[in-house]
Amino acid sequence: MRYISTRGRVEAKGFIDTVLMGLADDGGLMVPEQIPTVSAATLEQWATLSYRELVERSYASFRHPEVTPVKKINDSLSILELFHGPTFAFKDVALQFMGEFYSYVSKKQNEIIHILGATSGDTGAAAIQGVRGKEGIKICILHPHQKVSKVQELQMTTVDDENVLNLSVKGNFDDCQKVIKDLFADLDFKAKHHLRAINSINFVRILAQTVYYFYAYFRAQESAGTKKINISVPSGNFGNIFSGFLAKKMGLPIHKLIIATNENNILERFVKTGEYKPGDFKSTYSPSMDIQVASNFERYLYYFLGEDAAKVSEYMNNLKTEGRIVISAEDLKRVQQDFEALGASNEQCLELIKKYKAEYDYLLDPHTACGIAAYEAYNGADEVCVTFATAHPAKFDEAIRLVDIKQEFPAQIEQLFSKSQHQQVVEHDEAEIVRQLEAFYV
Image 1: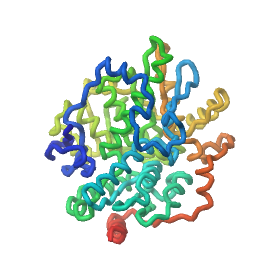
Image 2: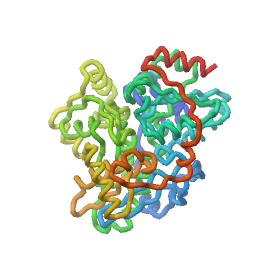
Image 3: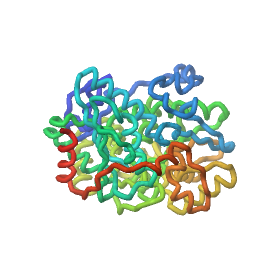
Image 4: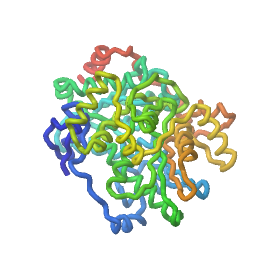
């Protein structure tokens, strides 16, 4: 399989070179030259496989034997629990694999790897856990200062390994992400420091996540009968839902792909109006989705525009110069064939956390609550839905306590509160961040 850039100005690459490149050298995102088609017969053969048979390696640290178990809540709703990895978030599924892969490449090519990423909370912890202590790898993660949950912060900053640097940036996630993109776009700086990406701009993240869409669908299929199967996905950076879009293009017969966002609802506005325009940043109870500029949107745009890289470049230039992308009414109908979308309010999320605990004795984290809000809005009478639980509720106890629910923390999370923290608080200043990186990479 060869990989190309959404903007068409990078020579086709093999898998390892694609992974090492991260952000494409022309500023685009890498995608497969062709998407393989999975036949109905193959899907039938896969339907009885366990998750470990679908993906055997990298998941020894997961706490559940099924890796990503599916819990049936009622006749129309099941929840895919993606939080059984070492950092209690869905990012572990991709980043445990990715950490092992980078370690393999470093040894195979005798090359130092410097991982650089930004996080809205979960990616950073999962990435650090995936590569901490590994020879030949250093990792620096930027997170927005005091805009992640306390547990998310502790999971990153209580790691005291020489190959880990945490920069707490006075700004929001989009500020952190822009610095990362700018540094990867500086090809001299990128080459000098062997920079590698851990964010979902790296196609490995997308690839690894695609697997659990198949697993979720097969588990739902066992009791769905003749009903159609929808999947509702909490999504901020468009990476997780894009993995589902790819699974559907490969032949998985998902009926509706439902994008669930919070009050930072750029994706909902695009699906409903055809305008992709960053709005005012809002801090919410679901901070991992407090994102206005969704990196992986460009990958969807590439396929939406018929794999026309020139058009993608034109659209992305419009976003840069005019601050928005606008599509026609006719094109909007096509978008709405691909997705439904809902931006849940803070109040909705809290109400649903309380409701599902009372009615089903199931505790939602606030991101999963957004997914449940979208399921309740869009699941039809002849349909069943799998909503993704993207994080353990213990990671967001600040929100859970607002509805007077006291939860018991898992031991691994409880232990974090007694550990010392290791981080550098910096201004939202690219020059200062570069100075920190230069010192770290020595």
